[in-house]
Amino acid sequence: MSTTTDVQSQPPTRVIIMLGQRYKATRVALDITQKEVSEKTGISMSTIRRFENGLTFNLTLAHFIALLQAIGFAANLEDVIPEMLPDPNELFKLQNKQRKRASHGKRGIG
Image 1: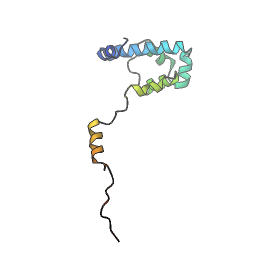
Image 2: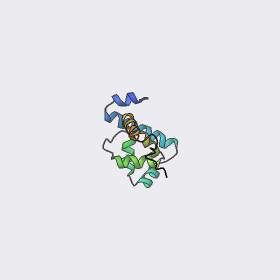
Image 3: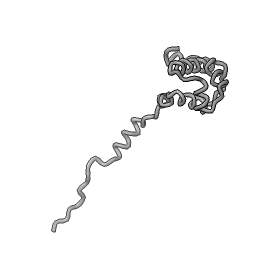
Image 4: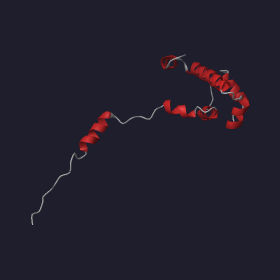
């Protein structure tokens, strides 16, 4: 699975297996042990092992985020669901409601 399109078309269980494999490869490349991850997160080593080996499909979102934090990858979560930009039509409406220039009103002479 090398592209987003591939992930989009896969069943969730296959995506979870792929995430576990990638997590393990990243953890090993960073020279972080399962024990170190367990100590940082409070997640049992058996849960970490099952996730990395594609044997668990009910890992909580909180645990998944903690696992990413333990290897320094939580910042990438910003890309998972990016903040939505304002709707261009709404921006246009707001800009048109704003005054373009100050009115001078009536000036008194005297």
